[in-house]
Length: 165
Ligand SMILES: Nc1nc2c(c(=O)[nH]1)N[C@H]1C(S)=C(S)[C@@H](COP(=O)(O)O)O[C@H]1N2
Ligand SMILES: [Mo]
Image (cartoon, rainbow, N blue to C red):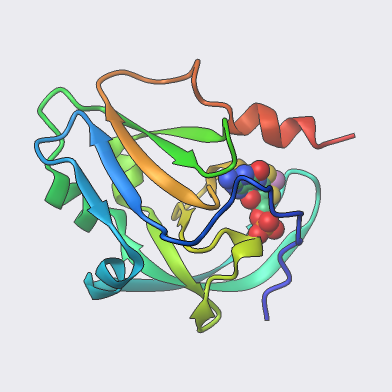
């Protein structure tokens, strides 16, 4: 059983009519609704989730789509190097080098059920391997493909660290 901490769901999070957009430095800008995500090859893995605030949720069983499949369809242009993963809660966005994003999973299920909105449903980014807790972007609404690192517009770390103390 997942023991992720439950934070308040911001008002800006509205799962009705959910759509994921892939935009920016790609050959094809694409949109996916949940049924379309369900049709893509699925990936599942179980891992502990640890937050820098000091709690750990053991054995979270994520299921979803490997980002590699989404990126392959969008075909990033040759100079594309990074992606900004935007969430529904306002300014929350996290930057990833594309090879790292390719290995991540866009989770739509948790522990065998549709991912609950309080844990980032309809879709949450779950990086594989070592990752910081703020990189697991809840309520993912857009993957903006870009041609340089986006440290200035990466707000996730500072928002997460501002919750400590
Ligand atoms: N969109 C969004 N994603 C987010 C955050 C956030 O504030 N907004 N917080 C991050 C942090 S710091 C943690 S620890 C986890 C918390 O996940 P949980 O709410 O499922 O426990 O979500 C991560 N993803
Ligand atoms: Mo966190």
